[in-house]
Length: 268
Image (cartoon, rainbow, N blue to C red; front, side):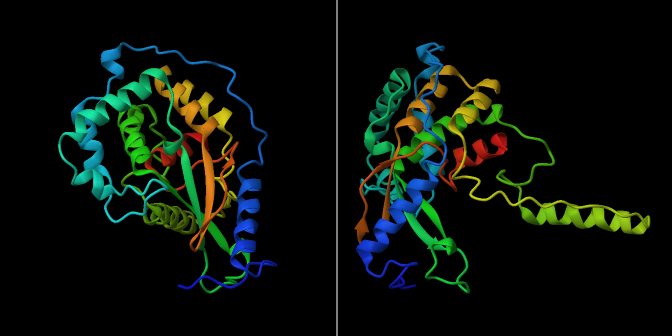
């Protein structure tokens, strides 16, 4: 689908790019930035923090093919078809990052691409777009490793259908219909409330998220690197072949990623 020639009052590619940059910068900074007040220490033995070769292999296998890359130009296939000599190098690298609680800038840089929400709607209105986040494949690999280590701590209620592996809206709709039919068979009235959380992913408060993760028992060394990650991440906007300057963010999580889907479950 070709890009529209205008978005709202912007009528040329550079102006449209600046419009998107300002739009997303406002959304991802709608909550004042606050550095996390609590510092987390390396609360585990090195043998428990170290990322071993099997973790790397499992995480690489779980990555999906044919996905867009980040600014570094590395695709999933680069990792899947690379020499086996890469595995121990990645193990050393990720182990060092977890031990020291830091990440390089390339792993914290995200590209936002606006895509149309409703193709039958007004494609010239910025309100009819949502951002897709393109991150470094290596950062996705780090996310998978963290996810595998803390997933058992982030379980949710059985009545939670969204953002969960093996669950979907079809199950939720089925339950809703069954409940409605039950009340109708009993000639009883019922009230239904629907809540549409506007920009739910984009407006996540990082400080509240960290507190909830800590309450769930997430190890300090993982909390420490997550705090560093979210407090230092940067975003760019891409429109066609143009890419905006980087800007800092103070709230929001990347929509569609396995780790952030779990974060959304425990945050709401």
